[in-house]
Length: 334
Figure 1 (cartoon, rainbow, N blue to C red):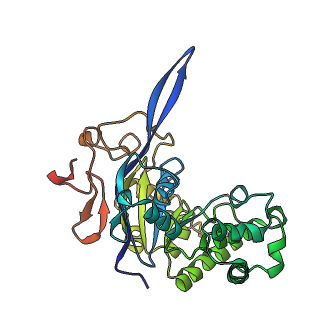
Figure 2: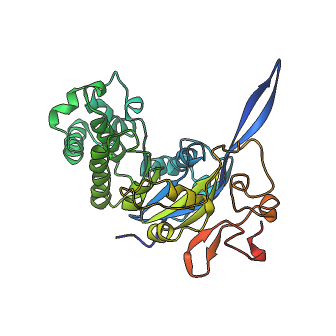
Figure 3: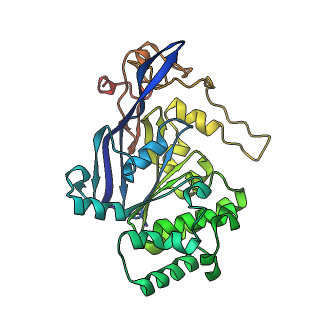
């Protein structure tokens, strides 16, 4: 059941990086706009999917929400409070309530620490419980993620990829957070293992009453798991809505292209969508128009001149799209 109260709200979030580009013997500094004005929200116990191709800014957005990166600008509201106004003690409590599951479980686990120490580390750092209580919590988590008790005495390299991802999920849940940011949690796993990890996440969501931001590029996983979905392209949200609505009636040409790339297990069925160029425009080369215009086969003159706003569809207010072809209105301009 999806909660109605907003747990997290992000407004105009941006992250810009200053890079040095070399031209022969000389170099100049350029700005990479990895994320540039993202707004989204999550309700309690809601799963929202953040979807887009590699390099669009999904992981950077997740890290800013989790507090691992400082935003260049924008606001993050957690339980109705602006996190920028938090006192040091409030910031510490905020960080306890948002945890992250990383894509590469092996690189996120210390190879020199045993699993028991890795899982208890969040409790030790935050001075939660005594030795007995930490061991009890460790045993509880190992049971919940489906690993035997003797796993605590083994090292990360002694586990399979799926088991290491379970350990990463267990570590994120040690502090009983309200929100988990899962960054491509199953992309490096076999299909059968993917299903097990997704089922584990959903079961733990229900038992811990979690909200979850699922960063992914596998649309079949997103459709099976997420309540809502946000499609991201070059640092901006271009379409968002209830998952079934977006999958049944994609409005943005980029969303249509993503869905057309999903393989169908029937050679007789051929999905058609406007093809897009394989080249992705680099975000250090800002454009006055729509960021997808250079790849969009349906782009018209105005698409190259102005940036479209994210506007709700007239037939479905929960479904919004940033596209002049869909929003043929004067208020579609920024």
